[in-house]
Amino acid sequence: MKFGTRIIHTGHEIDPTTGALSVPIYQTSTFAQESVDHFGKYDYARSGNPTREALEETIAQLEGGSRGFAFASGMAAISSALLLFSPGDHLVVCEDVYGGTFRVLTRLFSRLGIESTFVDATDPGKIETAFRPNTRGLFLETPSNPLLKITDLAGAARIARDQGAITLVDNTFMPPYLQRPLELGCDIVLHSGTKFLNGHSDVICGFAVTKDEELGRQLAFIQNGFGAVLGPQDSWLVLRGLKTLKVRMEESQRSAVAVAGWLVAQKRVPEVFYPGLASHPGADVHARQAAGPGAVLSFRLESVELTRRLLEGSTLAAFAVSLGGVESIISYPAKMSHAAMPPQARAARGVTDTLVRLSVGLEDADDLIAELDSLING
Image 1: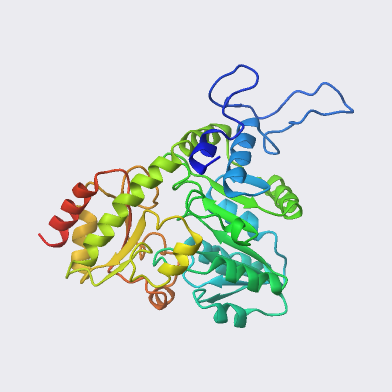
Image 2: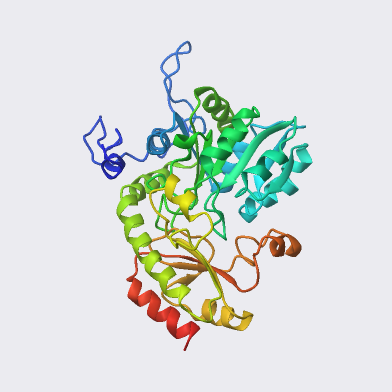
């Protein structure tokens, strides 16, 4: 089946007990047992819940993985996956990683004796040079947040595999309809499911999907032990949101292409970052490994004053943290997604005070462009 069909027909589209066309919400903390010697499949909801299980199996199937895990947030998913590593281990991480990931690596996991080296992952040579004898993991984002830099996933995963390390990819900007890192040789794919997977700005959630069964067993142990699981109500909401992933992504991506094309032509917009532009560094690599450029773009404005006017004057795009909703969301990375980075680290990565990030929703592209025109050029 094609991807759009598989989203709807995941094996959980009909409840086997009642025939309901929606997975039931098992709003329970525990499950009664009939025998001291033989417990049922479910005993305590942290360890397993039928609604969450349906979601986990669905996301694993869509990513082409063997095991899927639903967490209470994207950072819970990332942090749980990082618990696969031990004191003395070293990680190679793309330098323009999400600010929350940078914070947890440099301020929490560093205290546990897990060291990270940040490199320009668009250059395979720099990835390879950063590896040490104790390097156990390679952590990537592509397109990266917020400058949408592109990393060759297959090539990077090959470097890590040759060195005996695993590759983890935060795939939040590219839901599985557009990009599936596990099929490119990566080992763990991570998502802030809050964004495109749920798609309605009403749930905080995260996902991890593994390809290898043994890695899946290890992460299952961590999920149960650490306990940062997604609740049944939120799991049901994400299952509902996933059903429209294909149509939402196609429409948002179509509008993002139009908006990016318009921005490139504006004199007061010196730079636009979007892999759908032929001029974007890594556009060819992205086209080889993804089915489209996505619905997120970033751009610089000519002054801080103009940046403030755009952010505070926007009405069609909500000035807010996050992305991937049905509504467009315009963000200010320096004070939002990357506020956790020290100013000098932000500057080194190009996260300046004139950079904005736009997640294009389902509004008509002509209306979005008209408002951008009035705020930037008016």
